[in-house]
Image (spheres, helix red, strand yellow):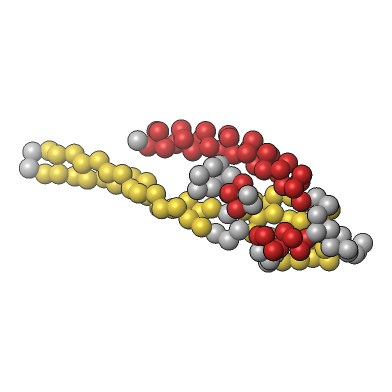
Length: 132
């Protein structure tokens, strides 16, 4: 069970790179040149901004953190009249997406970058799920 979980996580990590890249390309095609207000109306307000010297503003937006609980597994060994149970795993996986958008002084998105992208609930990219 433990080896299977590790293998699935490893495969997910490898595939998340491609999924994050494809999500980035999709976001570029969808949002570059578009009005920033449309992005905010669809996905919510950014939590941070930084004013650049050229008049542009860098906004940082995130999905908020969600988590998935992972159940523990257990192995019980019985030796005569004595039983011993050992628990493995458990805990939670936090899911999070954070992007940065460069917006012109006229309010149009000039550039974007995915800063953080964890596993999602259904696909290897949380950004893919939240910025659909």
